[in-house]
Image (cartoon, rainbow, N blue to C red; front, side):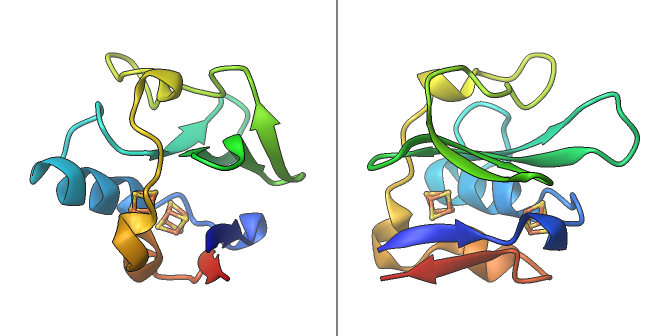
Length: 111
Ligand code: SF4
Ligand code: SF4
């Protein structure tokens, strides 16, 4: 089982990151989620960064999805813990909260 993405569907609402954080810690914090919204100064340029167990850091950008990245790939903003220092995605023990939270089905589960 793994998460898959449709990058161009994302509307940058950040609900996936919030859902992951709530499930892990019971609070919304920029420290623990395994998935983060990443944005850059460029207008309307944003994507996601996932720390996965099987594929390393996965970058979800408008250009496409790239896995196995060694770089930090984004920190989730000032004061946030870098993605490499966080716990990897455990797929919520089979019921991914980020998939449930996403309003536009950008994130899906694949067996
Ligand atoms: S599947 Fe669960 S642990 Fe993995 S990124 Fe989504 S909410 Fe976080
Ligand atoms: S919940 Fe969906 S639309 Fe919102 S930031 Fe996450 S992937 Fe993008």
